[in-house]
Image (cartoon, rainbow, N blue to C red; front, side, top):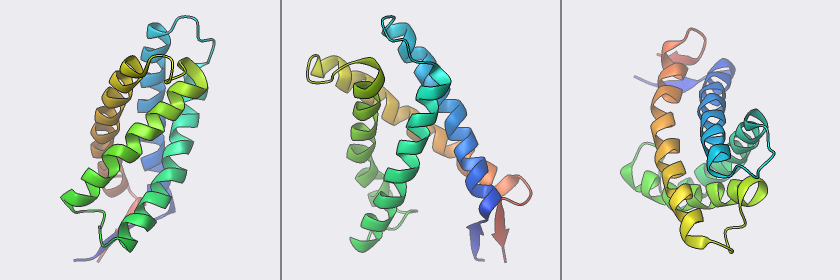
Length: 135
């Protein structure tokens, strides 16, 4: 049986990620009280980073013979997502080069959070009407 996302599915996926990344930004703001960023803005930026880098990662992964549903693709995503989280930290919370250990800790937790958010995001695509086609 073939299946794939429709336009609404993309928005469902992004909405779940936005909510989750906003929650993560709210948490990070408590860890970095000197940051003045609005968590919704940081969550939106993290979602946008994920969309842009995610599309590129899927394209690159497929060129390397890694397909989205394989365990190897998810292993490929780990360093990609570490860099995404380090970028978010750099923009809004902390210069990773100043405290690399702390930045890697938060980015690693962020990677775990990103993978956790993948579950409800993908479920939303396939469970909410208009999110995916199945034949």
